[in-house]
Length: 136
Length: 439
Image (cartoon, rainbow over all chains, first blue to last red; front, side):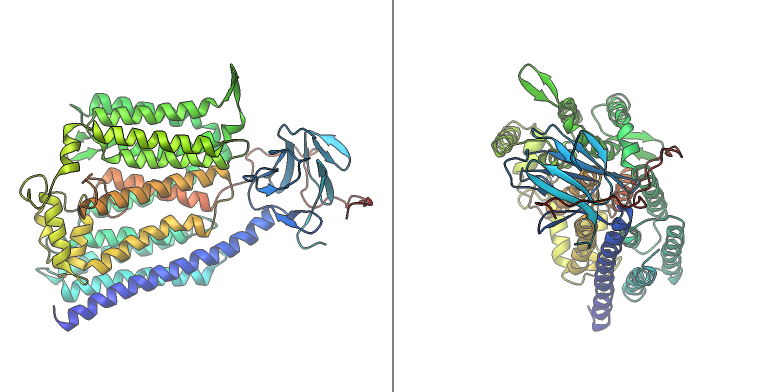
């Protein structure tokens, strides 16, 4: 193989390399815009504990004591699989999935309810505030 | 499009990558007249530009997979057009256009998982119909249907349906039914039954090559049940399931049919003209190609049977070099990595994406490792690269499903009644009286 052919092969491979790199960067860029879009879609809400805030990154959020829960509350008063939060059209709903101690929203025992900003959710002994992101 | 400049650059670099390949063919390729190179170049660039323009009509959250798809498909058009001399492979070109169209279909059908969830019975019915078609229309224990010049492999179409069946059943994990003392989920049994039927069908048709792909899809669906709310799948059960799988695999290998045993124990170098012909030639081809290849159209492997699908990795390595073939593998792996970079926002789409990626990765591994004699030769195709209408169409459809995972629809189709409509964030602020122990 002469030098020209070698150079051409290397150029073709390099252009594919750069293209692959650009497409990976595109995917990362889309991840950032996807996060913003998701926040808009879910009304910029989050759950907050005393010092921790839990992002709501998925359309179904499982809350419980079990290690596989999306929001893990390591407290014996909280059931392993306590509640599930779902979002539809920007509205978040919390549903009891057979917990022992139940769910109290603003002091009322509920089975399922649509959440509003600043609702206080009590799961066992743990209290969580459903609030806008960035609000302390 | 919110990332306009990024997408312009992506399109530009996809074009540059293809032009780089075409320049290589022009200066380095084996062609009789320059007209064949011009026709190939025009076809490739035309498809690029048309697809970029078509993307503008589809409002998606992400487009990275679209760019990767068109990059790969046109790469495959270029590769396939160079085997045995440069001339546009019209059949493969049309198949790629069909694959792009099926990608759009996959995207449109799979973006709303709530709607898809309601259609789950059709996936089981679809798989059942395909099984009946395979048993009745493919002739004597074969997986192919011949319709004149076209041959169709119905088992390929079972893959996306099986992925969808796995994904739809994940939401049913909460619907447990008590039978005696056991809490069971009917869908899990249905899925297991489906997997067993696919296995028996492939055993009957003597085509166990694509079985690992189905097993990988099923394994992903099975493992993701551990992550699903209330699945309550303990580590002990997982270890037991793994042990059972291992024992079944060992027994399966031990008592496999004679044609599988032959492939498991063939020594390709001592049987170069018999059972080891394709693999030995493929390895010689890869060695001859070296890092930078012999040049497009200068290879020998196009004389070997199934050079454009079963041993396509070796054929590309010989003509374009191992470096380029590995880059091609890397580009397919980027498609598989996209759901890791930008994770899906629902369990359904996560399961679907995992199943599709497992299918792509396993198919690619079986083909490449098989043609390199690292595992028995299976004859499975590389997604997007190998020739074959059924394979390309299904790969395109599954790529569309992957795009749907990235750009899902979370809005309910039913419009809420006006009086009872709920405004998500415009509620008047509730009077929030903090308690002592609260915030």
